[in-house]
Image (cartoon, rainbow, N blue to C red; front, side):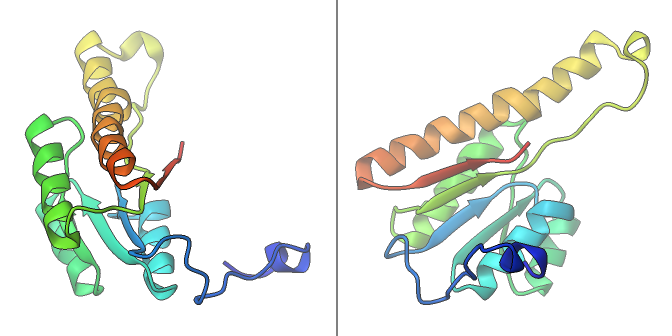
Length: 152
């Protein structure tokens, strides 16, 4: 972040500020764009970032950038379970934050989109995000704190 946000009166983030003791965050959809930017920014601010992506090549690219990265496909229940279980294993069972960012759109006219294509999109953008969020809510309730950010 830079520039106009700070000139307009918003305070600069301070690395020493600690919203939670563990400062771990799971971010979905980090292969590019907002997810990648947030992952890098939070890592620079001292957060332990678990950056996820759907494709193995993107996971490898995130690891090259120095991020802890895992494969996560929100259209696949087993992938959701596997990724969250791995994050919790690495953090001792805690998670300070979830940043839901992964999603995709269907380009084209409505009349050209099939029901199957729309179902696939809803599996990722709605049902998968909801499933991961519900699993994380249980963890956060048990530990007594946490933040969930929905990016859309």
